[in-house]
Length: 151
Image (cartoon, rainbow, N blue to C red; front, side, top):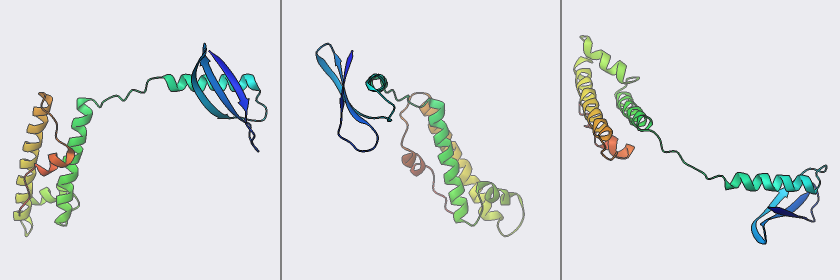
């Protein structure tokens, strides 16, 4: 590979155009900004390093099944918490906890705890299907497919 450096008219930091060739074939043209102490050899090195860095294939690693399932479990927890907050509770735990105590909130809390269990059963059945190879719905479809809470 060879690099041709052309200095640009520019005030401030040095600016060059670097053309990178393989034989007679132009592979890349880069515009590089350097420092006052850089010479053509420094710009050639910068051009080749920049070119090499851009030739590395960009690979997007798909998430593991465990990572995907963790996102769905987190979405389930967030959904349960949001429903609890709609009913004046801090989260699913404080709402379900009231089911164990006599008082004015017990009936609603028992319904919530039963609903939460139904959501967990549905969610973990779906996760088992996915582990077995079924396609995973979007998070929105996953949440929409859960039972509705009707106190």
